[in-house]
Image (cartoon, rainbow, N blue to C red; front, side, top):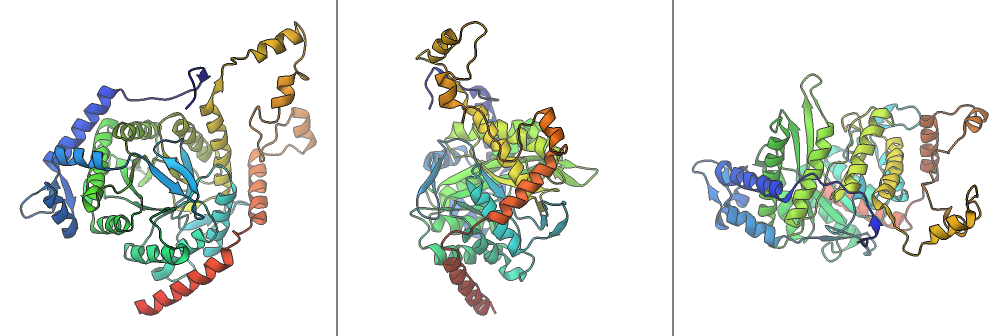
Length: 478
């Protein structure tokens, strides 16, 4: 926390009265309309905890008292560790934390934007790149490898992620039936997960108001192993949520409260990270996209979670754009800057483009630049209590210079953002260098980074253990 003499920009979009209103409307939805819970086991547990199941249906209604109990039972922060067991950050009382991802099918070549099926070699390179870039705090499952059998694709994706970084990992699976095996693989590679969790499973309900069996099962498996759980609602305004922002907000918030309640019923005290991806549905192109109001909803959701005392996971502004282009840059800047200025917690899915079907390493490097500058902007500056600047002004006098002042000599190396991608070129230097294009510099720097990446020192050991586990799993499955 900065002291009162620190100038720090912030964004707040909701008043306390508005947060109370959103909560009241969301809990009315849960108590009167309810949620369809497809898992018989989950329904039984919820009913045992005072929820009400409608006769002859899978719809469960949540009394407000049950939701209030769950909010009190859930931890207000989650300590996230790296693979070595060192504390990486505390989610819930910390700045916005960024990660790369998520589960794309194609890899976009940084040289020319050509697409190719996502393969294990691509996972290896982009995970190492995410490990090397300082803007990223976590690595989410980047892609679905297409060069291995579908029944082991999630296992290889997890192995190649963990072996190529020591940063915390957000795990997603494309085949729900493999989720338990994925957690078994992680334990085989690194030992017991619960004491110092570095793996965060990510699950979604089906909007609107459906907790499907696969999601409930994954929540049980994560809770049983003592893992923090990310529960995130993905809405498309006009399709799966009301098209009005307030309607989308109260619906998505109701789903998050339902997920939190179910997690606490499974195991009281389970760490849960809540958030929403408030997209829109394009009725002409039949796809989803983020609008400017999506980022306001993202901030509002973060404020609701802060009000509840629950860690937050928000949108990453990704999926928009055709590569490392102007569209991508605009959305990355808006999302990352507003995330740093608001109460956003985890921002786990940076770098995907073309409707989140392809992953662009160059877009990821561009986002790293945006994150660095957004964090500088959000940090602000202190007002000088020692009046050092006034002494410098007095020393220079009218018409003087500050080139050799003590403050300049002490601070010029870190006084402003220094990019390792884009030079601060004068017109003359730009001409002398052949009038380079910014996107060419970005592509060149990305390719250079990819060529220079090293594996963690235990890469070979982990790969050997992982390959053995997957081979055994294949034998037992058949």
